[in-house]
Image (cartoon, rainbow, N blue to C red; front, side):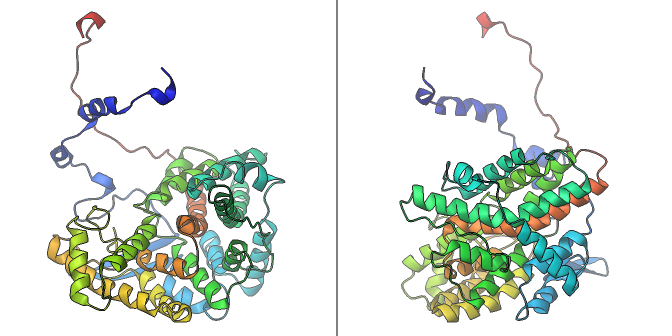
Length: 448
């Protein structure tokens, strides 16, 4: 039998019979599914000095939901954004903070930017021989493949000394925009049969400017576009340490693996629709709502369609209003709050006020609809994914690049966590799984 003639469906019933676990057993044995308890609290797996999330406060021993806050190295992320906006691009400044624990002086920031610029180069013919040789519409897989291939060019690949790992992390932070954008251009050319543009990075540009310059055929962008993208990168750069891809970073680091393997694993985690791919689902859902609700200003019509989505009667049948709710935040996601003002400004510049009004209406109505439908243990509010996809669409960034842009930002946080884990780890991260199988007596072949 040839490989492409094998019908694997015949085996799936066997897998279901062998592997399906009674849900009640998880409660019986005290298993915290998803490493979270019934109230959504995460299992404490480590300590970090990189970032912190606040979604509740305690008063007289009682846990009370509050507006969300996010700190980077002890600094409120909203204050960080307010500190650089309108004055300078913030990605490089906040990356310095996360990696080294302190805000840079003007001289230190200038030096750090020079280091990043000097690292914005790929090995000779890498773009042709690696990125263009295997174009894919799944750019996260393309990036992971490129990262693993870069390991072959590093003679000190397996050196896990702090100095060498920092060198590797800074190099990857520098080239991630190239891996993502060049990967898109290869896909767009070879699979979509469109023209290809490979623009070399310019050392004087910020990371946000460089992304837009390399992406667009004419290399042109407005200052507003670059600054909004810059803020998006800062807000996606790090998030508390307990998210899936950062935990993956720490788990693989704890095994003693190399930086390239660690970052490839983190990329594979981030690409999941429950993690980094969420903003794509928001954009697709909003398009669906726009097509099925004729009057975007009719709150009753919008509320009715949201109810249909929640009842699995519309959109993708999953029963989820994407961009609403978060595993940690309750009353508000601070990233969404700071983002919204810039989103409105960009919408006005792009003539997308009607779309912005629809987003704002759904931000208000969705929590009400969800509260009526489901028993929830905490508040539901818009998360950062709700607006980020809208921003990327206004920036004319193709859907295929949404999650890679998330990765361009989040690799800074991954790098900080990798180094923190290397400095503090003494054991491999190895969680426990309780076996619930029954013992079996061996059966001879002729008796099976």
